[in-house]
Length: 328
Image 1 (cartoon, rainbow, N blue to C red):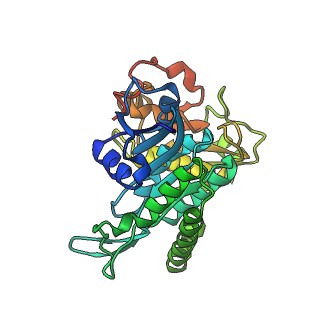
Image 2: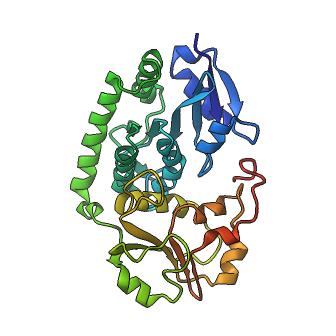
Image 3: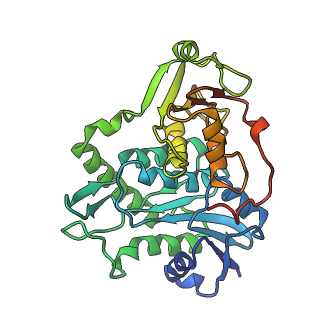
């Protein structure tokens, strides 16, 4: 008989996930920390998913759930919590509202960022690993449903998945894909610019990027034989991680990536932080595994600062301690 373990970032997510399927009633509940199995630590090496399900100690499913209003880049921060699983061949589920009501003075319906859907589809295709995006249901006023019925489709998928030998090729997965496609088409019909990169992302000739920035190509992974370079400009001035560190993975897969490794690109990926100089950057964003700021060095080919260009990231690495427990 298969023994299941639900590894969680927060106990309420483990409780929610366990209630989805009767087959999980006897599952072991375990917190995601430095004592987790090596395979779990590898999945969480980019960011901490809400749930990692183990079957006989092997990761078989990663789940991310959010009821937050899906505005702007915020949904993109969740991509980092799923992408490593896909690169390791572990299926993922992102349970998220495709539309929700934003409250406050200017209350209105807010759509899920279509690029988050497309990024996960691209991650699925590149890694040949299913990434399902079931919509969190809302009522006629776009308020999230919280009566238990919102979990019905996800619960059916988890039950069928477990009873199919942890194979995601089940009828509920097809239904999720159908709902996802309808939701994505609606979002795009309401905001066609989602088909293009956002204003903060430019696809430029590599020779122009090299000419603009002293320090390129440098000694890292930036390559001049890639004809084009994707430049993502992030205009923050202080310490920032979410949503930007997740967004970089989304933009990588949307506009650069051709395979499961960061070396598998047909365009360079450059992150441009014009408001931060080198000294300030390293004060706020050390390359310290176990600290979320380390993700700034996990994806891009180059980081452009106001007074420097960073390409060879290995020289800035501070050590390997605190892999998970400090990852907040």
